[in-house]
Length: 98
Image (tube, rainbow, N blue to C red; front, side):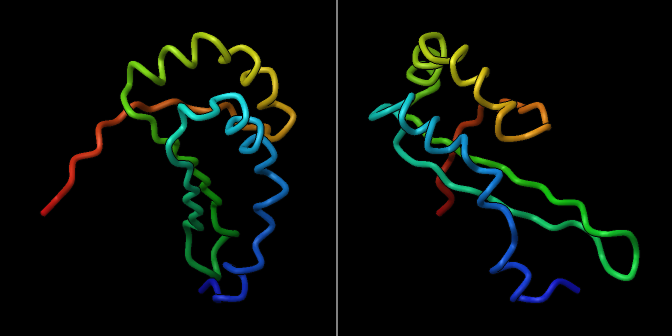
């Protein structure tokens, strides 16, 4: 089982150098950025799989697409400096649940 100390001291931050770049490039169009960090797997089996998802929120998909058309190439060039993983872009609509 993963201890709370492991969660709190995980070496995620050095892999997130692209976040300030993305925030700077998207600027005011980016309304929120959150990070989801997951360790999937149970000891004593092989080490857990680390899954990191960055959630970027914009006013609309149209705003995102317009911004991406302007700065997408620059951001794509910077991503390999921060990770070996190819990013997957997923567009979703957030629906409040009451």
